[in-house]
Image 1: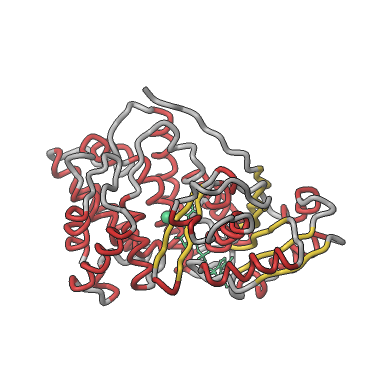
Image 2: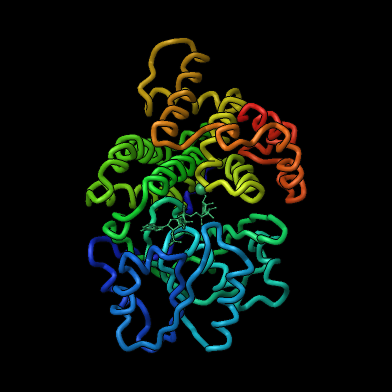
Length: 385
Ligand code: NZQ
Ligand code: ZN
């Protein structure tokens, strides 16, 4: 029996110039902490627009949140919020800044060691500070979901947590803020959003026609838009379509009531933690190998994907599945995102440590049917070398 429940309270202000809406979206008497990443929001003028929209409110800022945001850095923001008695957070950046802000929002109220938010995958979160986001990089969907992925640098651990308490109150989605993205980040964004859809769609069939066709339309958008975006990053229509596609890829809508996989993501997180690859770079390596390894369990959906997304209509079942996986790999490569560990000088000797990290994090029964054991992960990683 399908469960179609879908709850998402995030208000979306979409379009050019929508940063100005912050004046209505942030409470007038708020004591605000603006959180941002390295330099991009500063250099490209996004922060200035944000400060100007916040007007006379009391505002402090916290910069330096890294890609793959670190627990160590974020705890400094928690200290600032407490010391300065701030009461509203505003994330200005991509997935890392928004994820980091989610962690800060929850960690302020943590009763125990704040790292336990990650080790319990968010189960011990019962309160969070309200926050909003100004998105500068379409990719993760963090701007409209409850997920956050945090890295503990000292132990090379990258773990996620989820909590309904950390939905953003609002997100500003102004596609012009993404015009400055370098090719590498644009390509990463396309691959990440693509894989989010794949992990909710390429499972087993439960005859969920709306979720399936919605997922297929989002995939087709990415296939159409991705290559053009790399050439024309300042095209409003391309960026707007990309931004909304990436948001809808992981805001819970296409995943409502259907089985979900996420094995590729969990293995990818360990690769980033141990080897420093970008999040999407790990997905482009793991996804094709994972689809091939699990081709029997995913058979029906892979055939549907082959036909409806890649228009592959001839050949045996096995040939059509091979072709669909190859098209997926070729698409990632065409964007400049490599699909083998060896492209990053990582060989098979790295695999035991990745498996050991998976095991220590309890990632021993991954996938929509909990059949991705450590042994299956080993085969996937070997095939991905
Ligand atoms: O740090 P700055 O200088 O701001 O530069 C950033 C960063 O180096 C730059 N950037 C962002 N907006 C820009 C820009 N450069 C030029 N112009 C702009 N408009 O891009 C770099 C990467 O930013 P980051 O936020 O790290 O990228 P992304 O949005 O891909 O986020 C990746 C993180 O999100 C997690 C990943 O694991 C990773 O830690 N994820 C979060 C998810 C979620 N919350 O639901 C799901 C995802 O599967 C993913 O795991
Ligand atoms: Zn992802």
